[in-house]
Length: 169
Ligand SMILES: [Fe+2]
Image 1 (cartoon, rainbow, N blue to C red):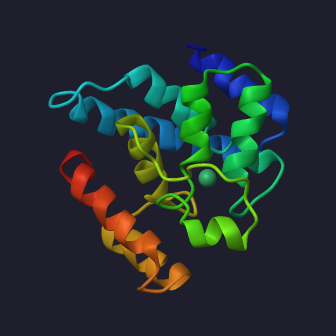
Image 2: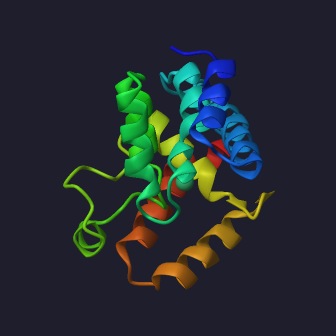
């Protein structure tokens, strides 16, 4: 596994702004915190969570919006970074990306919903940061409703993430 220092260097050399780097550090710290609590009940790779958290938004150096996850994952793959980290990046957007949105935004056909505990933890930790501030689940939920509408499948996935991880936040 690459070091924390190397992960931060990668963010810089790819051209991530200071704001993005600060956000990545915040998400990594919070995800690691959650991961430590989860590790009392489940086997979980804390190192993977820490580094995955740091690199989850590396794609924002190139693009914002729904594509930054898949673009970031491919940046990491091209650099020979562990596939597990690339998948954390690819599956972290929102509460994962629904099939309908894969079509709508013409994303490559891949799985964009977090599956492993490490993927879920980074994805969920990320959602708790809004404009650099850590917020409550109620605020995360409200933002999802405003962004997607109450019937969008992202809402159910967000609720499931909270059901799995809420007691460890
Ligand atoms: Fe992101």
